[in-house]
Length: 144
Image 1 (cartoon, rainbow, N blue to C red):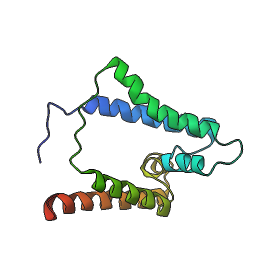
Image 2: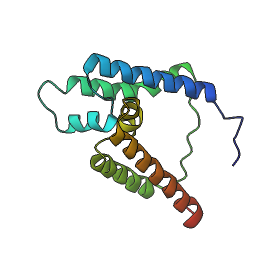
Image 3: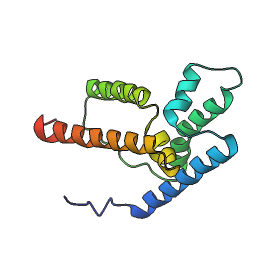
Image 4: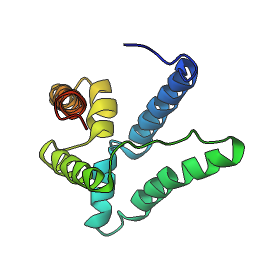
């Protein structure tokens, strides 16, 4: 394994992780809720009275952040090495996985692990393991 040191950005990655951690902690302290994206989005798809505005604002912030970031710096080149059908299948499987796992990577991996949740530890180990296995199969066995 080699690391592309030209594009290796540990300090910005660390800063990003710290910002995500602070945001997730603040969200939990202020709202008493977990910042799990699939749950927040799912609540928008099945709205309850008085529960839509904060969810919409959260999702709007996720969309607006890279747009605002682009004003101050250039975005990195995005290179996706998969076709549209594969991306659609991957998205559907991810959505199904978040339903069966009762949460997503942000809910379990960031918020759940920080609360020392055993359920989140198991979920994170499963989705990371499946991700590793999928990449291995797709890149080395199938050759995609």
